Length: 231
Image (cartoon, rainbow, N blue to C red; front, side, top):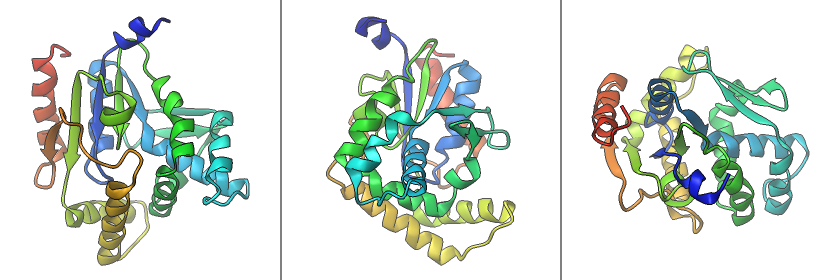
């Protein structure tokens, strides 16, 4: 496929920190449009776990990056309840989605070698009829030519409450204040890193989901994609 034909495949990017509803939004969009979906944040989580399994220190970013090319990764499912993340034939969703794994991913995400190793892999998800890109730098780095870029936000306190509800639904528990501190710390690390910091693209549309439920967020986004002729 030529560069021109690849560039003609539409992409909608949905960026923002954890807990703002990106997963719900992107799964819904992919289903309604019949497009593919890329969860780029999961790639970093998967790579961090693979490094630990291989006995590689996360500080050895060149060695971590070298693992990226050998991982067979697939995403299946159209809803949070039936989603699976397959790595080398094994469903690792429960481990990948844990709060501790998110912290590990944030540690390696700032490394230039790691980002370079995963960049082309992310670009390869751009196949017809279209792609929904879920991440932190989809609109700024990976798909800067995307015709529609969204950036979701929400307060750290609200995101901590959402995470606590998820944990309790999964039979786990946590302290709300601790979750809020962890989320704020990760936000600061992601915003201030020198490589691909967590910032909205200059042409991104910002949506604050703090006071919105998933249906209200979906309605706002559907209006935007209708305006661009995707629905």
